[in-house]
Image (cartoon, rainbow, N blue to C red):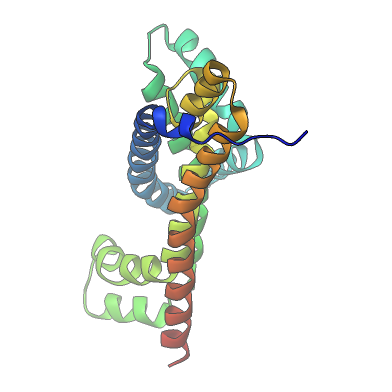
Length: 223
């Protein structure tokens, strides 16, 4: 006996999925925004001539790159409030976990971009009398960011997908609402299929845009 799909259930409760999607987008947007800033700072720390600062930053980066995001989310949600002795909202815990993880990856992306900037251009900046901060702002950062934009965007899409993991700590994101509706309606196939399609509809166009940008950047570099 074949399974009868009943997607009217999805439409009936689509407002719940939409509210969950908004939470997922908020988590992603805040986390990506913070990681863009802290990732650059950590890249500078990683390239610092200060041995201790460089090694501590490297340890942070490797820890968050080499441990599962789910473990990080659960740790931040359950353990961090116990250590600090304060109550932290679920949303803040989710943002913090995703930001800490993405910052590590962004730091490495920034570092590769900074190291790819031609040294002769930096030397020109020195010859013009620019300070270290001015060289970073006007020469290094613009070129580094231009080269790694596809990587940054791809990682941001990955964070949007990984944001589904916060559902395990009762944050009402898209995945949480999907699981809740699955239990309430007894129609997990329809609900979870719709959830997967929503992630796809948002992520796929962005990944295709990244490919276009990569091709154009490659052509500019060849010129």
